[in-house]
Image 1 (cartoon, one colour):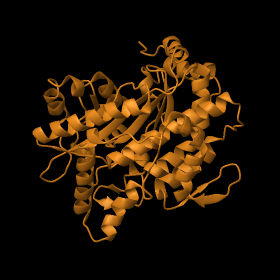
Image 2 (cartoon, rainbow, N blue to C red; image 1 turned 90 degrees about the vertical axis):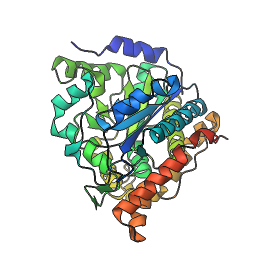
Image 3 (cartoon, helix red, strand yellow; image 1 turned 45 degrees about the vertical axis):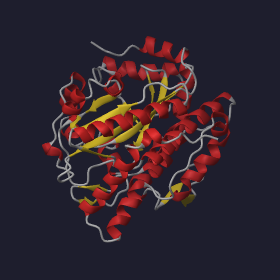
Length: 387
């Protein structure tokens, strides 16, 4: 029996409110003694039950050594972030009482995926049964941003317009250079493990209209390829349950400040894509093979390498990706009051620099975990930066 209702999904988009925001952040659950992954999700979930705010904000994500917090719907970015800040504060306080730490890198630097347990839910049992090794190996941590878009065809056009933007967002957010006890040489091992392994993942085809999108989803259902929509893991997708465009390309962020800035940049990109569509600004649906060239460059080199202007083939420094997106989104950032202040180096660059400075991998990870604790735990006292 399919759990996918495209008719209701379309209706949600037709009734949606533009530029509402929902935030989702995934954290590793760590043993303070050695900073290895520890399977304590169920204990944290149960301990959170007396706190109605936190209990409603946390969710499980595939493995028992991972926990997610969700803001729920905010009418604006500022409201969503205020809710997320409070959820962060409560989660980190709860972690202290339960004797665990929380990490925020896209992969754990040395944890053995074979020792992790899939959480006991129908959805994740289905994922495990369908994917086997691909699911077992996916010990990764990311951030997802939902932005409300009114109109089903318009939501599809926004997703289409965001396809070439995805590699830039990944290069900016890359925060997973280490895996299996070594420097993997990539900036986003999370993307290599998840985006390049899962089916129906990465950069989707352009669909143009809701009808074309719906026909593809119906094909997947008819051929018994999927039984629920969340088995479509694209890096940008229309979310049928919420009437949102969901951007899923980014690694989780090591510090609260850069997470907040990244949220703002993503919201601005979605909003600007919608505005460009409304105003009929020219847009060409590039072949996935071209966008994938930039995806690989973002995965491998992050902000250290070069990205391509896909219409001309000219290369430019990847470190300019932030400025390019800020320039493009300036009209909607001004309209929505979104200020973005990202560090010049992404998380992968900063983690790798700690090794260059002479730290061991364990010391570098401990330093990053402390930066996470000191910023996310205090994030309820942070103010949302707006113009």
